[in-house]
Length: 265
Image 1 (cartoon, one colour):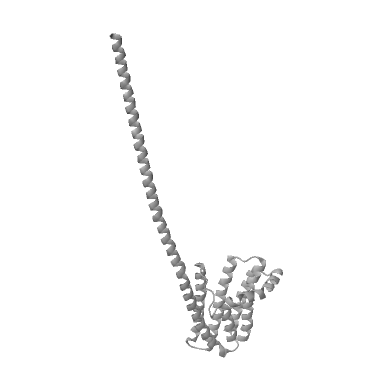
Image 2 (cartoon, rainbow, N blue to C red):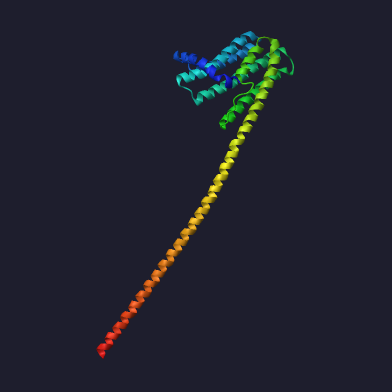
């Protein structure tokens, strides 16, 4: 939701900061890597019960994730490799933080409640996979109630008090599931149009092939008819030429006999 509605506003605010960091020699890859380190520190703080410290470290993790893009743009180093590195580290950071929460719940809430963070992680991974797969197919799958920015905000609220943690996780699970269902429906709907367009193009192509084949057949027929006519005309000419030569030869022999007869007479 934040990514779609306030992305331009956020980019205008972080752009100058990204240019300043680039000028002092900070690269986007360094920010991405150090963000992963701060995510691991957040997970450790949560697992050991230091929830308030985890809020500070979570904010630090979010700042790294927020600024690596502007730094890459300012330095002109935006690339497929950088985007891939950023996406992978985001997934690892999510797994670390939710793993730290699971460790904390295992220590403080015996029972099956420890599975709740893993359920959130599973649905979160599905949301990310849906976007990646849809974009690889040329379909935009952004948006939804619970993207990464919203998850970070809710986790910060959950770390305010141990009493908030479990209810917030349930809210995250429900909203993330709705986001996954909404993205699936969106991609399913958008994927129908290219398929129908492709079918229409294939039908037009097949029709064009049939028309071309018919035209070629007609052209071949006309060419064959013209060739046959030329052959007949040439044949008749040859026959006429032969008949003419035969007639002239006969006339020549007749003239020779007549001249020979006059001499003898």
